[in-house]
Amino acid sequence: MSVVVHREVAPGGLWPRMSLGRKQVIWAWGFLAVPLVFYAVIRFWPTFQAFYLSVTDWTITKPASFVGLENYKRLLSDSLFWQVFRNTFLYLLLGTPISLLISFMVAYYLDRVRFMHSFLRALYFLPFLTTAAAMAWVWRWFYQPVPIGVINDILAGFGIPQQPFLRSTSQALPAVLAPAVWAGLGFQIIIFLAGLRAIPVTYYEAARIDGLSEGAILRKITIPLLKPTLVFLVVFSSIGFLRIFDQVYNINTNDPGGPLNSTKPLVLMIYQTAFSSYEMGYAAAQTVVLFLILLVISLAQLRLMRDR
Amino acid sequence: MTDAAFSQGLPMPRIRPGRIVAWTLLLIGGVIMVTPLLFMLSTSLKDASQVYDLRVIPEAPTLDNYIEILGDGRFTRWFLNSAIVAAIVTLSNVFFDSLVGYTLAKFRFRGRYIVFIAILSTLMIPTEMLVLPWYLMASQFGWLDSYWGIMFPGMMTAFGTFLMKQFFESVPDDFLEAARIDGLNEFTIWWKIAMPLVTPALSALAIFTFLGNWTAFFWPLIVTTSADLYTLPVGLSSFAVEQSIQWEKIMTGASIATLPTLIVFLLLQRYIVRGVMLAGLKG
Image (cartoon, rainbow over all chains, first blue to last red; front, side, top):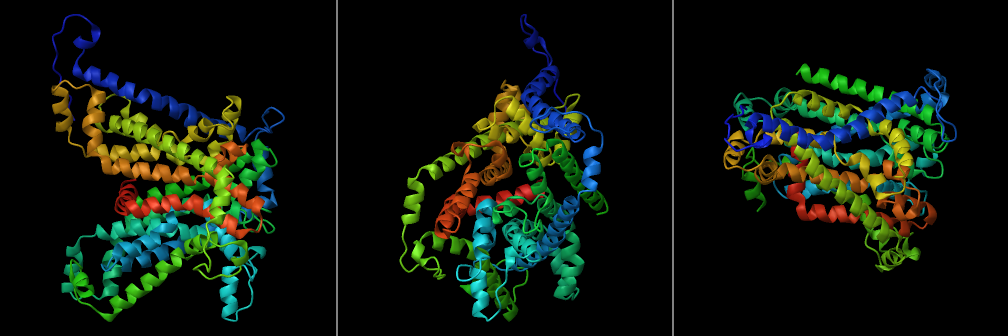
Protein backbone atom coordinates (compact mmCIF):
# COMPACT_ATOMS: atom_id res chain seq x y z
CA MET A 1 0.00 0.00 0.00
CA SER A 2 1.32 3.39 -0.86
CA VAL A 3 0.32 6.31 1.25
CA VAL A 4 -0.95 9.22 -0.76
CA VAL A 5 0.87 12.29 0.37
CA HIS A 6 -1.07 15.46 -0.10
CA ARG A 7 -0.53 18.48 2.02
CA GLU A 8 -3.41 20.43 3.35
CA VAL A 9 -2.94 24.09 3.65
CA ALA A 10 -4.11 25.09 7.06
CA PRO A 11 -3.41 28.02 9.27
CA GLY A 12 -1.06 27.29 12.16
CA GLY A 13 -0.85 24.24 14.43
CA LEU A 14 1.46 21.27 14.03
CA TRP A 15 -1.14 18.56 13.27
CA PRO A 16 -2.88 20.16 10.23
CA ARG A 17 0.48 20.89 8.60
CA MET A 18 1.70 17.31 8.94
CA SER A 19 1.83 15.05 5.89
CA LEU A 20 -0.68 12.23 5.73
CA GLY A 21 2.17 9.72 5.99
CA ARG A 22 3.49 11.25 9.20
CA LYS A 23 -0.06 11.37 10.64
CA GLN A 24 -0.48 7.70 9.85
CA VAL A 25 2.68 6.82 11.76
CA ILE A 26 1.38 8.69 14.78
CA TRP A 27 -2.02 7.00 14.52
CA ALA A 28 -0.33 3.59 14.25
CA TRP A 29 1.74 4.03 17.39
CA GLY A 30 -1.27 5.52 19.14
CA PHE A 31 -3.26 2.38 18.35
CA LEU A 32 -0.39 0.18 19.51
CA ALA A 33 0.46 2.04 22.71
CA VAL A 34 -1.82 0.25 25.18
CA PRO A 35 -1.34 -3.21 23.63
CA LEU A 36 2.45 -2.81 23.65
CA VAL A 37 2.41 -1.98 27.36
CA PHE A 38 0.20 -5.04 27.91
CA TYR A 39 2.52 -7.37 26.00
CA ALA A 40 5.58 -5.97 27.74
CA VAL A 41 4.16 -6.28 31.26
CA ILE A 42 1.93 -9.39 30.98
CA ARG A 43 3.90 -11.45 28.46
CA PHE A 44 7.56 -10.47 28.05
CA TRP A 45 8.49 -9.47 31.57
CA PRO A 46 6.92 -12.65 33.09
CA THR A 47 8.74 -14.77 30.50
CA PHE A 48 12.12 -13.45 31.65
CA GLN A 49 11.00 -13.71 35.24
CA ALA A 50 10.11 -17.40 34.78
CA PHE A 51 13.64 -18.12 33.52
CA TYR A 52 15.09 -16.15 36.40
CA LEU A 53 12.91 -17.86 39.04
CA SER A 54 14.01 -21.25 37.71
CA VAL A 55 17.56 -20.56 38.94
CA THR A 56 16.46 -19.40 42.40
CA ASP A 57 15.25 -21.16 45.54
CA TRP A 58 12.19 -18.92 45.90
CA THR A 59 9.49 -20.23 48.20
CA ILE A 60 6.48 -18.36 49.54
CA THR A 61 8.16 -17.78 52.90
CA LYS A 62 11.69 -16.79 51.96
CA PRO A 63 12.93 -14.36 49.30
CA ALA A 64 14.56 -15.69 46.15
CA SER A 65 18.30 -16.22 46.05
CA PHE A 66 20.36 -17.43 43.12
CA VAL A 67 21.17 -21.14 43.17
CA GLY A 68 22.42 -21.71 39.63
CA LEU A 69 21.26 -24.89 37.94
CA GLU A 70 20.44 -26.57 41.26
CA ASN A 71 16.71 -26.89 40.44
CA TYR A 72 17.46 -28.53 37.08
CA LYS A 73 19.92 -30.98 38.65
CA ARG A 74 17.32 -31.86 41.26
CA LEU A 75 14.71 -32.34 38.55
CA LEU A 76 16.90 -34.74 36.56
CA SER A 77 17.49 -36.89 39.65
CA ASP A 78 13.84 -36.75 40.77
CA SER A 79 12.21 -40.12 40.06
CA LEU A 80 8.78 -38.46 40.20
CA PHE A 81 9.81 -36.19 37.32
CA TRP A 82 10.71 -39.15 35.11
CA GLN A 83 7.42 -40.84 35.96
CA VAL A 84 5.59 -37.62 35.09
CA PHE A 85 7.65 -37.18 31.93
CA ARG A 86 6.67 -40.70 30.84
CA ASN A 87 2.98 -40.07 31.63
CA THR A 88 2.97 -36.77 29.73
CA PHE A 89 4.37 -38.40 26.61
CA LEU A 90 1.98 -41.33 26.99
CA TYR A 91 -0.92 -38.85 26.86
CA LEU A 92 0.62 -37.36 23.74
CA LEU A 93 1.61 -40.58 21.98
CA LEU A 94 -1.70 -42.32 22.64
CA GLY A 95 -3.98 -39.31 22.42
CA THR A 96 -2.81 -37.66 19.20
CA PRO A 97 -2.84 -40.68 16.83
CA ILE A 98 -6.03 -42.16 18.26
CA SER A 99 -7.98 -38.91 18.13
CA LEU A 100 -6.72 -37.98 14.65
CA LEU A 101 -7.50 -41.42 13.24
CA ILE A 102 -11.04 -41.38 14.59
CA SER A 103 -11.72 -37.79 13.58
CA PHE A 104 -10.34 -38.31 10.07
CA MET A 105 -12.50 -41.38 9.53
CA VAL A 106 -15.60 -39.58 10.76
CA ALA A 107 -14.85 -36.46 8.68
CA TYR A 108 -14.08 -38.51 5.54
CA TYR A 109 -17.49 -40.17 5.59
CA LEU A 110 -19.36 -37.20 7.02
CA ASP A 111 -18.12 -35.12 4.09
CA ARG A 112 -19.96 -37.42 1.66
CA VAL A 113 -23.19 -37.55 3.61
CA ARG A 114 -25.83 -34.98 2.77
CA PHE A 115 -28.81 -36.52 4.56
CA MET A 116 -29.06 -34.93 8.03
CA HIS A 117 -25.47 -33.75 7.64
CA SER A 118 -25.61 -30.89 10.14
CA PHE A 119 -27.46 -33.01 12.70
CA LEU A 120 -24.76 -35.69 12.57
CA ARG A 121 -22.03 -33.06 12.70
CA ALA A 122 -23.67 -31.50 15.75
CA LEU A 123 -23.63 -34.83 17.61
CA TYR A 124 -19.86 -35.05 17.16
CA PHE A 125 -19.23 -31.39 17.87
CA LEU A 126 -21.24 -30.98 21.08
CA PRO A 127 -18.63 -32.51 23.44
CA PHE A 128 -16.10 -29.88 22.27
CA LEU A 129 -18.25 -27.19 23.89
CA THR A 130 -18.31 -28.80 27.31
CA THR A 131 -16.27 -27.76 30.34
CA ALA A 132 -13.45 -30.27 30.88
CA ALA A 133 -13.65 -29.88 34.67
CA ALA A 134 -17.36 -30.76 34.60
CA MET A 135 -16.99 -33.65 32.17
CA ALA A 136 -14.22 -35.21 34.26
CA TRP A 137 -16.86 -35.72 36.97
CA VAL A 138 -19.26 -37.34 34.51
CA TRP A 139 -16.57 -39.76 33.37
CA ARG A 140 -15.46 -40.36 36.95
CA TRP A 141 -19.01 -41.49 37.66
CA PHE A 142 -18.98 -43.75 34.55
CA TYR A 143 -15.86 -45.52 35.81
CA GLN A 144 -17.28 -46.38 39.23
CA PRO A 145 -17.84 -50.05 40.18
CA VAL A 146 -21.35 -51.56 39.96
CA PRO A 147 -24.08 -50.72 40.76
CA ILE A 148 -23.40 -47.02 40.14
CA GLY A 149 -20.83 -47.13 37.34
CA VAL A 150 -22.35 -47.09 33.85
CA ILE A 151 -19.44 -48.76 32.03
CA ASN A 152 -19.04 -51.59 34.54
CA ASP A 153 -22.79 -52.04 34.45
CA ILE A 154 -22.73 -52.49 30.68
CA LEU A 155 -19.74 -54.84 30.95
CA ALA A 156 -21.61 -56.88 33.55
CA GLY A 157 -24.52 -57.13 31.13
CA PHE A 158 -22.19 -58.88 28.69
CA GLY A 159 -20.76 -61.08 31.45
CA ILE A 160 -17.37 -59.30 31.36
CA PRO A 161 -15.62 -59.07 34.77
CA GLN A 162 -15.52 -55.73 36.58
CA GLN A 163 -12.68 -53.39 35.67
CA PRO A 164 -10.97 -51.19 38.27
CA PHE A 165 -10.35 -48.27 35.81
CA LEU A 166 -9.33 -45.27 37.94
CA ARG A 167 -8.20 -47.50 40.80
CA SER A 168 -5.64 -49.37 38.70
CA THR A 169 -2.18 -48.02 37.91
CA SER A 170 -2.31 -49.51 34.41
CA GLN A 171 -5.89 -48.59 33.44
CA ALA A 172 -6.11 -45.14 35.02
CA LEU A 173 -4.11 -43.24 32.39
CA PRO A 174 -6.15 -44.45 29.39
CA ALA A 175 -9.30 -43.87 31.46
CA VAL A 176 -8.27 -40.24 32.06
CA LEU A 177 -7.24 -39.84 28.43
CA ALA A 178 -10.63 -41.00 27.08
CA PRO A 179 -12.59 -37.86 28.07
CA ALA A 180 -9.80 -35.67 26.66
CA VAL A 181 -9.92 -37.48 23.30
CA TRP A 182 -13.73 -37.47 23.36
CA ALA A 183 -13.95 -33.71 23.95
CA GLY A 184 -11.38 -32.88 21.25
CA LEU A 185 -12.84 -34.95 18.39
CA GLY A 186 -15.49 -32.41 17.39
CA PHE A 187 -12.94 -29.67 16.72
CA GLN A 188 -10.67 -31.96 14.70
CA ILE A 189 -13.61 -33.23 12.63
CA ILE A 190 -14.67 -29.68 11.76
CA ILE A 191 -11.12 -28.76 10.71
CA PHE A 192 -10.79 -31.94 8.64
CA LEU A 193 -14.14 -31.17 6.99
CA ALA A 194 -12.91 -27.69 6.09
CA GLY A 195 -9.72 -29.19 4.67
CA LEU A 196 -11.62 -31.79 2.65
CA ARG A 197 -13.94 -29.16 1.25
CA ALA A 198 -10.99 -27.05 0.12
CA ILE A 199 -9.85 -29.79 -2.27
CA PRO A 200 -11.16 -28.90 -5.75
CA VAL A 201 -13.84 -31.29 -7.03
CA THR A 202 -12.11 -31.32 -10.44
CA TYR A 203 -9.24 -33.35 -8.97
CA TYR A 204 -11.65 -36.08 -7.97
CA GLU A 205 -13.42 -35.96 -11.32
CA ALA A 206 -10.14 -36.27 -13.20
CA ALA A 207 -9.08 -39.19 -11.01
CA ARG A 208 -12.38 -40.93 -11.56
CA ILE A 209 -12.13 -40.49 -15.33
CA ASP A 210 -8.67 -42.06 -15.09
CA GLY A 211 -10.35 -44.99 -13.36
CA LEU A 212 -8.68 -44.68 -9.96
CA SER A 213 -10.29 -46.70 -7.18
CA GLU A 214 -11.66 -44.99 -4.05
CA GLY A 215 -8.69 -46.28 -2.05
CA ALA A 216 -6.22 -44.92 -4.59
CA ILE A 217 -7.97 -41.53 -4.63
CA LEU A 218 -7.74 -41.40 -0.84
CA ARG A 219 -4.03 -42.25 -0.87
CA LYS A 220 -2.94 -40.21 -3.90
CA ILE A 221 -5.16 -37.14 -3.74
CA THR A 222 -7.03 -36.66 -0.46
CA ILE A 223 -4.26 -37.38 2.05
CA PRO A 224 -1.43 -35.50 0.26
CA LEU A 225 -3.64 -32.44 -0.23
CA LEU A 226 -4.71 -32.56 3.42
CA LYS A 227 -1.12 -32.35 4.64
CA PRO A 228 -1.30 -28.73 5.89
CA THR A 229 -4.52 -29.53 7.79
CA LEU A 230 -2.93 -32.66 9.18
CA VAL A 231 0.22 -30.87 10.35
CA PHE A 232 -1.87 -28.17 12.02
CA LEU A 233 -4.01 -30.73 13.83
CA VAL A 234 -1.04 -32.88 14.89
CA VAL A 235 0.65 -29.87 16.46
CA PHE A 236 -2.55 -28.43 17.93
CA SER A 237 -3.61 -31.69 19.56
CA SER A 238 -0.05 -32.57 20.65
CA ILE A 239 0.21 -29.28 22.51
CA GLY A 240 -3.20 -29.95 24.04
CA PHE A 241 -2.24 -33.40 25.32
CA LEU A 242 1.13 -32.18 26.63
CA ARG A 243 -0.71 -29.55 28.69
CA ILE A 244 -3.46 -31.84 29.99
CA PHE A 245 -4.58 -30.80 33.48
CA ASP A 246 -8.31 -30.14 34.05
CA GLN A 247 -9.39 -33.75 33.46
CA VAL A 248 -6.60 -35.29 35.53
CA TYR A 249 -7.13 -32.95 38.45
CA ASN A 250 -10.91 -33.48 38.61
CA ILE A 251 -11.16 -37.17 37.89
CA ASN A 252 -9.29 -38.06 41.07
CA THR A 253 -9.53 -35.19 43.56
CA ASN A 254 -8.61 -37.38 46.55
CA ASP A 255 -5.17 -38.01 45.08
CA PRO A 256 -4.74 -35.90 41.92
CA GLY A 257 -2.51 -37.73 39.46
CA GLY A 258 -2.92 -41.01 41.30
CA PRO A 259 -3.03 -43.88 41.91
CA LEU A 260 0.70 -43.86 42.69
CA ASN A 261 1.30 -40.92 40.31
CA SER A 262 0.35 -43.13 37.37
CA THR A 263 -1.76 -40.42 35.72
CA LYS A 264 0.20 -37.34 36.80
CA PRO A 265 1.16 -35.05 33.88
CA LEU A 266 3.80 -32.32 33.95
CA VAL A 267 1.34 -29.44 34.45
CA LEU A 268 -0.13 -31.14 37.52
CA MET A 269 3.37 -31.65 38.93
CA ILE A 270 4.05 -27.94 38.35
CA TYR A 271 0.78 -27.02 40.09
CA GLN A 272 1.53 -29.21 43.11
CA THR A 273 5.16 -28.12 43.41
CA ALA A 274 4.13 -24.47 43.30
CA PHE A 275 0.85 -24.40 45.21
CA SER A 276 1.00 -27.42 47.53
CA SER A 277 4.72 -27.51 48.40
CA TYR A 278 5.26 -23.79 47.66
CA GLU A 279 8.61 -24.51 46.01
CA MET A 280 8.20 -21.78 43.41
CA GLY A 281 11.77 -21.90 42.11
CA TYR A 282 11.64 -25.63 41.55
CA ALA A 283 8.22 -25.30 39.87
CA ALA A 284 9.61 -22.56 37.60
CA ALA A 285 12.34 -24.95 36.41
CA GLN A 286 9.60 -27.46 35.54
CA THR A 287 7.75 -24.82 33.51
CA VAL A 288 10.95 -24.11 31.58
CA VAL A 289 11.17 -27.83 30.74
CA LEU A 290 7.56 -27.73 29.51
CA PHE A 291 8.46 -24.71 27.40
CA LEU A 292 11.43 -26.54 25.87
CA ILE A 293 9.28 -29.58 24.99
CA LEU A 294 6.68 -27.36 23.31
CA LEU A 295 9.40 -25.42 21.51
CA VAL A 296 10.84 -28.59 19.99
CA ILE A 297 7.37 -29.62 18.79
CA SER A 298 6.68 -26.18 17.27
CA LEU A 299 10.04 -26.20 15.46
CA ALA A 300 9.28 -29.67 14.12
CA GLN A 301 6.03 -28.23 12.77
CA LEU A 302 7.82 -25.41 10.96
CA ARG A 303 10.16 -28.01 9.47
CA LEU A 304 7.27 -30.15 8.28
CA MET A 305 5.46 -27.16 6.78
CA ARG A 306 8.56 -26.13 4.85
CA ASP A 307 9.00 -29.62 3.38
CA ARG A 308 5.51 -29.40 1.98
CA MET B 1 -36.39 -37.32 0.20
CA THR B 2 -33.40 -39.48 0.89
CA ASP B 3 -32.67 -40.19 -2.77
CA ALA B 4 -33.13 -36.60 -3.80
CA ALA B 5 -30.86 -35.35 -1.04
CA PHE B 6 -28.23 -37.91 -1.90
CA SER B 7 -28.12 -37.08 -5.58
CA GLN B 8 -27.77 -33.33 -5.08
CA GLY B 9 -24.36 -31.74 -5.24
CA LEU B 10 -22.60 -34.92 -4.22
CA PRO B 11 -19.22 -35.63 -5.80
CA MET B 12 -20.37 -39.17 -6.58
CA PRO B 13 -24.03 -39.32 -7.51
CA ARG B 14 -24.45 -43.10 -7.39
CA ILE B 15 -26.27 -44.49 -4.37
CA ARG B 16 -24.68 -47.62 -3.08
CA PRO B 17 -25.43 -49.75 -0.05
CA GLY B 18 -22.05 -48.68 1.30
CA ARG B 19 -23.36 -45.14 1.63
CA ILE B 20 -26.25 -46.28 3.80
CA VAL B 21 -23.94 -48.37 5.98
CA ALA B 22 -21.62 -45.37 6.40
CA TRP B 23 -24.56 -43.16 7.36
CA THR B 24 -25.77 -45.67 9.95
CA LEU B 25 -22.30 -46.06 11.44
CA LEU B 26 -21.94 -42.27 11.63
CA LEU B 27 -25.25 -42.07 13.47
CA ILE B 28 -24.23 -44.78 15.95
CA GLY B 29 -20.89 -43.03 16.55
CA GLY B 30 -22.68 -39.72 17.03
CA VAL B 31 -25.08 -41.19 19.56
CA ILE B 32 -22.11 -42.65 21.48
CA MET B 33 -20.53 -39.17 21.46
CA VAL B 34 -23.52 -37.56 23.17
CA THR B 35 -24.16 -40.47 25.56
CA PRO B 36 -22.14 -38.92 28.42
CA LEU B 37 -24.18 -35.72 28.04
CA LEU B 38 -27.46 -37.65 28.01
CA PHE B 39 -26.51 -39.56 31.16
CA MET B 40 -25.44 -36.35 32.84
CA LEU B 41 -28.78 -34.69 32.07
CA SER B 42 -30.90 -37.68 32.93
CA THR B 43 -29.20 -38.22 36.28
CA SER B 44 -29.62 -34.54 37.13
CA LEU B 45 -33.39 -35.15 36.80
CA LYS B 46 -33.44 -38.11 39.20
CA ASP B 47 -33.74 -38.09 42.97
CA ALA B 48 -31.30 -39.96 45.19
CA SER B 49 -33.39 -43.13 45.21
CA GLN B 50 -33.35 -43.43 41.40
CA VAL B 51 -29.65 -42.83 40.82
CA TYR B 52 -28.84 -46.52 40.82
CA ASP B 53 -31.43 -47.09 38.12
CA LEU B 54 -29.30 -46.43 35.05
CA ARG B 55 -32.15 -45.96 32.54
CA VAL B 56 -31.61 -42.88 30.39
CA ILE B 57 -35.23 -41.68 30.62
CA PRO B 58 -35.89 -41.09 34.33
CA GLU B 59 -38.94 -42.88 35.71
CA ALA B 60 -40.08 -39.87 37.69
CA PRO B 61 -38.20 -36.81 36.43
CA THR B 62 -37.86 -34.05 38.99
CA LEU B 63 -36.28 -30.60 39.05
CA ASP B 64 -35.62 -30.86 42.80
CA ASN B 65 -31.84 -31.05 42.32
CA TYR B 66 -31.85 -27.84 40.29
CA ILE B 67 -34.13 -26.09 42.77
CA GLU B 68 -31.92 -27.14 45.69
CA ILE B 69 -28.61 -26.27 44.02
CA LEU B 70 -29.70 -22.98 42.50
CA GLY B 71 -31.52 -22.12 45.73
CA ASP B 72 -28.36 -22.24 47.80
CA GLY B 73 -27.02 -19.26 45.87
CA ARG B 74 -23.47 -20.36 45.28
CA PHE B 75 -24.05 -21.65 41.76
CA THR B 76 -25.83 -18.47 40.70
CA ARG B 77 -22.86 -16.51 42.02
CA TRP B 78 -20.31 -18.70 40.17
CA PHE B 79 -22.42 -18.58 37.04
CA LEU B 80 -22.46 -14.79 37.22
CA ASN B 81 -18.71 -14.64 37.89
CA SER B 82 -17.98 -16.79 34.84
CA ALA B 83 -20.35 -14.80 32.66
CA ILE B 84 -18.87 -11.44 33.72
CA VAL B 85 -15.26 -12.59 33.34
CA ALA B 86 -15.83 -14.28 29.98
CA ALA B 87 -17.82 -11.34 28.62
CA ILE B 88 -15.28 -8.67 29.59
CA VAL B 89 -12.31 -10.68 28.33
CA THR B 90 -14.15 -11.34 25.06
CA LEU B 91 -14.97 -7.65 24.54
CA SER B 92 -11.39 -6.71 25.30
CA ASN B 93 -10.04 -9.24 22.78
CA VAL B 94 -12.49 -8.22 20.08
CA PHE B 95 -11.45 -4.60 20.55
CA PHE B 96 -7.70 -4.80 21.07
CA ASP B 97 -6.82 -7.84 18.94
CA SER B 98 -8.59 -6.34 15.96
CA LEU B 99 -7.11 -2.89 16.59
CA VAL B 100 -3.59 -4.31 16.65
CA GLY B 101 -4.31 -6.72 13.78
CA TYR B 102 -5.64 -3.82 11.71
CA THR B 103 -2.68 -1.59 12.49
CA LEU B 104 -0.22 -4.32 11.51
CA ALA B 105 -2.14 -5.15 8.34
CA LYS B 106 -2.96 -1.68 7.05
CA PHE B 107 -0.38 0.85 8.26
CA ARG B 108 3.15 1.22 6.92
CA PHE B 109 5.63 2.48 9.49
CA ARG B 110 9.10 1.69 10.72
CA GLY B 111 9.08 -1.01 13.40
CA ARG B 112 5.90 -2.65 12.15
CA TYR B 113 7.62 -5.95 11.41
CA ILE B 114 9.39 -6.03 14.78
CA VAL B 115 6.11 -5.41 16.61
CA PHE B 116 4.48 -8.21 14.61
CA ILE B 117 7.28 -10.70 15.33
CA ALA B 118 7.36 -9.71 19.00
CA ILE B 119 3.63 -10.34 19.44
CA LEU B 120 3.76 -13.53 17.40
CA SER B 121 6.66 -14.84 19.48
CA THR B 122 4.50 -14.82 22.61
CA LEU B 123 2.59 -17.74 21.05
CA MET B 124 5.63 -19.89 21.81
CA ILE B 125 5.36 -19.26 25.55
CA PRO B 126 2.96 -21.67 27.29
CA THR B 127 0.59 -20.14 29.83
CA GLU B 128 1.89 -22.53 32.48
CA MET B 129 5.28 -20.85 32.34
CA LEU B 130 3.78 -17.41 32.98
CA VAL B 131 1.49 -18.55 35.76
CA LEU B 132 4.10 -18.27 38.53
CA PRO B 133 5.19 -14.71 37.61
CA TRP B 134 1.52 -13.75 37.18
CA TYR B 135 0.77 -15.14 40.61
CA LEU B 136 3.67 -13.16 42.05
CA MET B 137 2.47 -10.02 40.25
CA ALA B 138 -1.12 -10.55 41.39
CA SER B 139 -0.10 -10.99 45.01
CA GLN B 140 2.16 -7.91 44.93
CA PHE B 141 -0.54 -5.67 43.45
CA GLY B 142 -3.37 -7.18 45.51
CA TRP B 143 -5.08 -8.74 42.50
CA LEU B 144 -5.49 -12.19 44.05
CA ASP B 145 -9.13 -13.06 44.59
CA SER B 146 -10.55 -10.40 42.27
CA TYR B 147 -12.21 -10.29 38.86
CA TRP B 148 -9.27 -8.36 37.49
CA GLY B 149 -6.94 -11.06 38.82
CA ILE B 150 -8.83 -13.72 36.88
CA MET B 151 -9.05 -11.60 33.73
CA PHE B 152 -5.78 -9.73 33.31
CA PRO B 153 -3.68 -12.47 31.65
CA GLY B 154 -6.16 -12.92 28.81
CA MET B 155 -7.17 -9.35 27.93
CA MET B 156 -5.30 -9.63 24.61
CA THR B 157 -3.97 -12.65 22.77
CA ALA B 158 -1.43 -13.12 20.01
CA PHE B 159 -3.69 -15.75 18.44
CA GLY B 160 -6.54 -13.26 18.10
CA THR B 161 -4.24 -10.54 16.81
CA PHE B 162 -2.79 -12.85 14.18
CA LEU B 163 -6.26 -14.04 13.14
CA MET B 164 -7.55 -10.48 12.74
CA LYS B 165 -4.43 -9.36 10.86
CA GLN B 166 -5.01 -12.13 8.32
CA PHE B 167 -8.57 -10.96 7.75
CA PHE B 168 -7.83 -7.24 7.61
CA GLU B 169 -5.25 -7.93 4.92
CA SER B 170 -8.06 -8.98 2.60
CA VAL B 171 -9.90 -5.65 3.08
CA PRO B 172 -9.25 -3.52 -0.05
CA ASP B 173 -7.16 -0.41 0.57
CA ASP B 174 -9.42 1.58 -1.76
CA PHE B 175 -12.23 1.49 0.80
CA LEU B 176 -10.00 2.98 3.48
CA GLU B 177 -8.47 5.48 1.05
CA ALA B 178 -11.92 6.71 0.03
CA ALA B 179 -12.87 7.23 3.67
CA ARG B 180 -9.60 9.09 4.24
CA ILE B 181 -10.36 11.46 1.37
CA ASP B 182 -13.80 12.02 2.90
CA GLY B 183 -11.92 13.33 5.92
CA LEU B 184 -12.69 10.56 8.42
CA ASN B 185 -10.06 10.07 11.09
CA GLU B 186 -8.16 6.78 11.33
CA PHE B 187 -10.04 5.52 14.37
CA THR B 188 -13.40 6.07 12.66
CA ILE B 189 -12.11 4.40 9.50
CA TRP B 190 -11.14 1.31 11.50
CA TRP B 191 -14.27 1.20 13.62
CA LYS B 192 -16.90 2.21 11.02
CA ILE B 193 -15.42 1.01 7.71
CA ALA B 194 -12.97 -1.85 8.33
CA MET B 195 -14.59 -3.63 11.30
CA PRO B 196 -17.96 -4.31 9.60
CA LEU B 197 -16.07 -5.95 6.72
CA VAL B 198 -14.58 -8.65 8.97
CA THR B 199 -17.61 -9.62 11.08
CA PRO B 200 -17.21 -13.37 10.36
CA ALA B 201 -13.70 -13.22 11.82
CA LEU B 202 -14.88 -11.12 14.75
CA SER B 203 -17.58 -13.64 15.61
CA ALA B 204 -15.06 -16.49 15.34
CA LEU B 205 -12.73 -14.65 17.70
CA ALA B 206 -15.58 -13.87 20.10
CA ILE B 207 -16.79 -17.48 20.16
CA PHE B 208 -13.32 -18.87 20.82
CA THR B 209 -12.48 -16.33 23.49
CA PHE B 210 -15.78 -16.70 25.30
CA LEU B 211 -15.70 -20.49 25.23
CA GLY B 212 -12.07 -20.58 26.35
CA ASN B 213 -12.77 -18.33 29.31
CA TRP B 214 -16.07 -19.95 30.21
CA THR B 215 -14.38 -23.35 30.53
CA ALA B 216 -11.02 -22.10 31.91
CA PHE B 217 -9.91 -23.95 35.03
CA PHE B 218 -6.16 -23.73 35.65
CA TRP B 219 -5.62 -19.99 36.22
CA PRO B 220 -8.93 -19.30 38.04
CA LEU B 221 -8.11 -22.24 40.34
CA ILE B 222 -4.79 -20.59 41.22
CA VAL B 223 -5.85 -16.98 41.51
CA THR B 224 -9.10 -17.38 43.47
CA THR B 225 -9.21 -18.53 47.08
CA SER B 226 -12.59 -17.39 48.36
CA ALA B 227 -15.69 -19.24 47.14
CA ASP B 228 -17.38 -15.93 46.29
CA LEU B 229 -14.97 -15.38 43.41
CA TYR B 230 -14.80 -18.88 41.99
CA THR B 231 -15.70 -19.23 38.34
CA LEU B 232 -18.19 -21.94 37.44
CA PRO B 233 -15.62 -24.71 36.69
CA VAL B 234 -13.67 -24.05 39.90
CA GLY B 235 -16.86 -23.76 41.93
CA LEU B 236 -18.23 -26.96 40.44
CA SER B 237 -15.01 -28.79 41.27
CA SER B 238 -15.11 -27.71 44.92
CA PHE B 239 -18.85 -28.45 45.10
CA ALA B 240 -18.36 -31.95 43.68
CA VAL B 241 -15.62 -32.72 46.22
CA GLU B 242 -17.92 -31.74 49.05
CA GLN B 243 -20.86 -33.80 47.64
CA SER B 244 -18.60 -36.87 47.55
CA ILE B 245 -20.88 -39.61 46.21
CA GLN B 246 -24.16 -37.77 45.66
CA TRP B 247 -23.87 -38.21 41.93
CA GLU B 248 -27.28 -36.70 41.11
CA LYS B 249 -26.14 -33.43 42.73
CA ILE B 250 -22.79 -33.49 40.95
CA MET B 251 -24.47 -34.17 37.60
CA THR B 252 -26.85 -31.27 38.20
CA GLY B 253 -23.88 -28.98 38.80
CA ALA B 254 -22.14 -30.31 35.69
CA SER B 255 -25.32 -29.72 33.68
CA ILE B 256 -25.57 -26.14 34.90
CA ALA B 257 -21.97 -25.56 33.79
CA THR B 258 -22.45 -27.23 30.40
CA LEU B 259 -25.99 -26.50 29.24
CA PRO B 260 -25.54 -22.78 28.39
CA THR B 261 -22.81 -23.43 25.82
CA LEU B 262 -24.72 -26.38 24.35
CA ILE B 263 -27.92 -24.34 23.98
CA VAL B 264 -26.07 -21.40 22.42
CA PHE B 265 -24.47 -23.84 19.98
CA LEU B 266 -27.77 -25.40 18.98
CA LEU B 267 -29.14 -21.92 18.29
CA LEU B 268 -26.13 -20.64 16.37
CA GLN B 269 -24.72 -23.87 14.95
CA ARG B 270 -24.07 -22.54 11.47
CA TYR B 271 -22.11 -19.48 12.63
CA ILE B 272 -20.12 -21.40 15.22
CA VAL B 273 -19.05 -24.15 12.83
CA ARG B 274 -18.10 -21.55 10.22
CA GLY B 275 -16.19 -19.63 12.89
CA VAL B 276 -14.23 -22.70 13.97
CA MET B 277 -13.37 -23.45 10.34
CA LEU B 278 -12.23 -19.87 9.73
CA ALA B 279 -10.07 -19.78 12.84
CA GLY B 280 -8.63 -23.21 12.17
CA LEU B 281 -7.71 -22.48 8.57
CA LYS B 282 -6.27 -19.01 9.04
CA GLY B 283 -4.87 -19.40 12.53
